[in-house]
Image 1: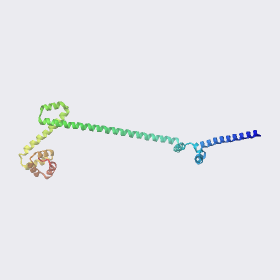
Image 2: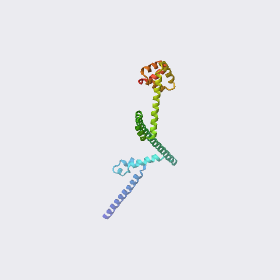
Image 3: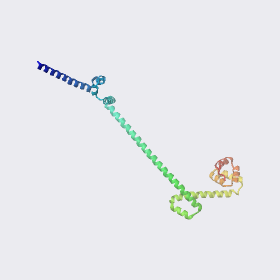
Image 4: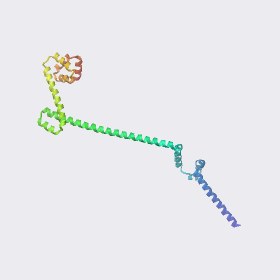
Length: 236
């Protein structure tokens, strides 16, 4: 009889263990498949058991991807890919265009700097050349001409000699006009101002101040006004 009791106790233990295994397996399957969202609704609130639930982050990511692409058919997916490729192409074209524009601006800046350097150099050369010509130093002129390029020297020489010719012409005008009466000179200035305004200015600037004032008083008032504006502060 004791043996029968012992045998019965073993059977009960085996049944309990079997139920636990069966229940555990069923529970694992239930957690894995999550029918009716039971994990969030029930198991999540049970201590110990909630530690066996899958991470919510992975589930959220899975739901996000599913929600994002669930309604996309193959044609729609192809269209979306095509649109993205088109936008990418346009963006690359804009980047290329901006890069080219930036390169052109850099070239223009470089060109302007070169022009500025050339202009500064030419200005200094012109000043040196002017001093040599003004002093009529033939030796210095020869040394200078050998130093600079012939093109630059000729350009400077042309500008200087042109200015000298103009100055000589002005001196000749003044020499002649000084022998004439004021009314006649004023009449000549009124005629000359129509074709050579700058020459009239140079003549009046180079004349004696008192004589210049008398000539201006005898000229046409309109011409007098124009000349006076230019000569303000420049009458000798």
